[in-house]
Amino acid sequence: MDQLPPNTIVGIILALFTALGFLKNFVKFFFNLISLALGTLAGLWAYNNGFAIAKKAVAQPEPWMSAAIGVITFILTVIVIRKVLGFLSGKSGEGSQARTGGFGLPGGTFGLLLGLGFAYFMLTGVRYAGTMSELERLKNYVTGKIDTSSKEPTWAKLKKWVDESEIGQWHQKIDFLNDPMETTATKLAIVQENKEKYAQVTAQQSGEIIYDAVPVDPAIQEAYDQGNYAGLLRNKEVQKRIRGIFSDEQLEKLDIEAILGLRQ
Image (cartoon, one colour):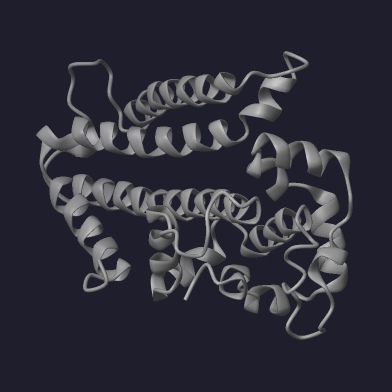
């Protein structure tokens, strides 16, 4: 993985999609691949927001509801995206060929555009899954379930691998789903729940204790207890309070896992 940078992988994806765009028989393959990619991303998002979604229907959501919502969202997204792509490509029936997917420049251009979309959502999905695994691991650490010898999750490693690449840094600027500052603030909220044990986590620039910057909020406590990390990521009170004390530059440089010894 270290020997094959994300830039090269994205380049291979674009070249492959463009080349296959010249072949009519691969149009359906394109649709299925894009649909699965978007369906997976949507399902992952729905799973991590499952508690909040289910709570609109029932007062006390059950743990299985998040998984059910994620699966249903995945299936519906795959179906809808396939229909939309079929319509945009000019398909008049399930068995007909896409007019833009035939030999020549239109098919190649169509393939390139699909490749760009696939690469974008692939990077977005990797970064989002990596963030969720980082938050889960941090919570397990501060609650004493694991120690510093535990292995870093695969998704977290992939996220770091992407973020350290040139294309990953560029993609981060247009990533609609992931915000590094929100992630850092969420990690502070998790540490807040164990502030006496982890008081060594400090803002390196100001020297202030980080947990003192995180507001005590019932919504934060509930999201924390339920493992609703997406709810913590989008909590406006946490984001407002953190940004009122620390600059984006300070938050960007802060590596909580490294401070706690979870990352070398």
